[in-house]
Structure formats: C-alpha cells, structure tokens
Image (cartoon, rainbow, N blue to C red; front, side, top):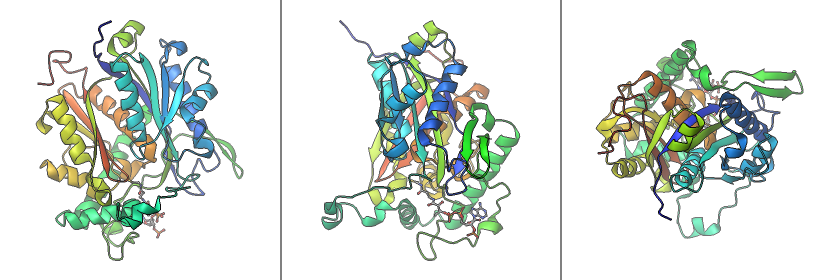
Length: 405
Ligand SMILES: CC(C)(COP(=O)(O)OP(=O)(O)OC[C@H]1O[C@@H](n2cnc3c(N)ncnc32)[C@H](O)[C@@H]1OP(=O)(O)O)[C@@H](O)C(=O)NCCC(=O)NCCS
C-alpha cells in the first residue's frame, strides 16, 4: 500500500477561563482533570457532526503528571467526558509546550495516516501543582555542570536573557507588559476573548457552587509609572517583575484537529491548515530564546520567510523573551501583527495549556484577516527549548493553491 502525507486542519479550539494561581484562585478547590473534561464535552457540543467514535486519539499535556493531573490524563479525561471506551488517549509533557506538542504529535500521526481525527490539549493547575513539584533532578546535572542550576528557575533565565541582550531594557520589557494588558482589555471589551471560553462549574467551601466565566489574571489599567518600582523577585535590582512576566495560572485548553479530507467528509470546519512545525534546543540558562531557532527551522521546513507571516501568536512567558524573537527578526516591539489580543503577561500562562490557546486565538484572527495567508505560533520551553507551528489561513484567496514556495 502506497502512503501519502495528508493535509491536517485545525477544526476548533476552546479553553477554560484562567485562574490566578493561589489560595484565592477560582479553581482552588476544583480538580484539574475536571477542567479538561468540561472542554472535551464542549468541543463535542460545538461540533455535533463529529461522531464521538470517530475520535482516534485524546492527547492531553500536563507538566506535573501526578494526582488530578496524573493517571494518563488524556485517557482518564476521555472516559470521564463520556467518549466511547474505544477512544484511546495518553498524557504528554514538554513543560510549557506540552499542549503544543500534544497537537503536533497527533497532527503528525494524522498526516501519515495513523489517525483521522484527534483531540489535543493541556492543563496546568499551578495552585495544586506548583512548578517543580516532586522534582528530583539527577545530581549529575549539577556535579557535571550539564546545566547551570540557574536554568531551573525560569525567572532567572529571563534575567540572563536581559544580560545577553542589554539593549532589551527593563523599560522595553515594562512597555511590552503594559501593551499586553491594554490589548487584552480592548479585546475583552470587544467581546473577542469570550468566544472560545467555556464556563466551568467550580466549588468553594466558602461560597459553594459557582461558575468561572472570566480570566482572573489580567490587570487592566496597568501603567508604566505603576509598575516602575515593582520588586524584582529573581535578582536584586533585576529587570524581571510581576508586570513583565506571565503570572502563575490555573487553566486548560483543548482542540480538535483532523485530516483535511476527513474534516470535509464530516462537515467539520477547517479554521487553519498546518503548514510546518519545529522544536529546537538552546542553552537551558537562556531558555527564552528558544523560539528563535524553532522559528528558523519551521520557516525553512515550510519554504517561507518571516516576511510571509502576517500574524503572530507568541506566548509571553516573559516580555524579554518575546522581545528577543522580535528583535532577531527586526520586528518592532509594538508591531500590530503580534498578539493583537494581548498575551500571557495579561491572560496568564498555565504551562502545558498555553500552546493550544495560541492556536485557538490565531484561528480567530484568520477569520477577520483574509488578507493574511500565513500565521505563526511560538513559545519558549523550560530547560532551553522553543516550539513553533506555522498555519495557513483558509480565508485567504490563494488557500489550497500550490504554496509554501
Ligand atoms: C513574577 C512572579 C514571581 C510574581 O509573583 P507574585 O509576587 O505572586 O505576583 P503578584 O501578582 O503578587 O504581584 C507582585 C506585586 O506586583 C504588583 N503587580 C503585579 N502586576 C502588576 C501590574 N500589572 N500593575 C501594577 N502592579 C502589579 C502586585 O500588586 C503585587 O504587589 P504587592 O506586592 O504590593 O501586593 C510570578 O508571577 C512568576 O513566577 N511568574 C513567572 C512564572 C513562570 O516562570 N512561568 C513559566 C514561564 S517559562
């Protein structure tokens, strides 16, 4: 039998409202797996043309895979969501790019005929599972100086990046953080953010049952003056503060991806077409620069250049790390193609979830930007990695034509 590589499309994506991690988080007493279950059920509700038994895989990422994020969460969430027992699932981890990797794995499987339709997503309940929970690094990592111990604290790696690129000043990082808050606030006021948010039933022993309907982390009205003198928790007189870093966050995301021909047969929408993806490694102590080589690889694989990209959804783990990518390509800090609805500095970054939030948001931008043919989603990853996925806009006049140069 002759095998061919098939086109893969992004069908739909959803997320929970995000919670600001801590005792007061809206999800403090809600299970992480229940967040994923609610999203799978909502994806099925929004796409009734998709027979549940047609789902070939449920891949869910979590950075900490114990407790309510353990037990092969893709499989347990599929069962809890009421999908048929015949639908398999698994868990996956690439820290911040867990959800992105869940999606690229199942999309690669679809491309070679190992699946037709799949659900991919991620969850991170950073209140219940703080970064580094249960972590037992091999002593050789330190004794053989394989990785600078500083590389194990993401905020310190962001300070290191400021050292490496001194022209990426605290002022630029703060201005980028303020802009992220402003763009998010405008998108929220315009009703953009709400489109793919799934209300989540929550429990609080103080308030009883409730419904989470909105993101908690954003800080509307953030000003340069208001954040100028915030503490720099990762280094005395450093540059990284709570206002130019993503906050600790609780939340989940999920999406449906499918072979383009199968989506068409089932009557499922194709909101984006996968063009290429790449992951790359960098020195762990400057992990934030990871998106640069990942993007170079993904562009090369697509036969595209950065000038072909009309929209960017970049995960804002830290301002400096986004600025390092923009600076590399000569893109202005305030380029309107970048994160038009703000980013993780405002909305939050529930580690393994964030990649699928970028996809879902890019798909929304494509709907209103038919002039843009290609969009790019990218993020940095702990221990020195980056991941980039490039997508094509089905609303563009040349969609489907011989492309990717
Ligand atoms: C940076 C970090 C340590 C801050 O944590 P925190 O101190 O709990 O954050 P808070 O929200 O309490 O903010 C700290 C202070 O800054 C203030 N602040 C934060 N953002 C602000 C804003 N946009 N405008 C004005 N003030 C702000 C808060 O009000 C608070 O002030 P207070 O100390 O007077 O109460 C934490 O968010 C963090 O670790 N982020 C990085 C997460 C990460 O590494 N993710 C993985 C990436 S790879």
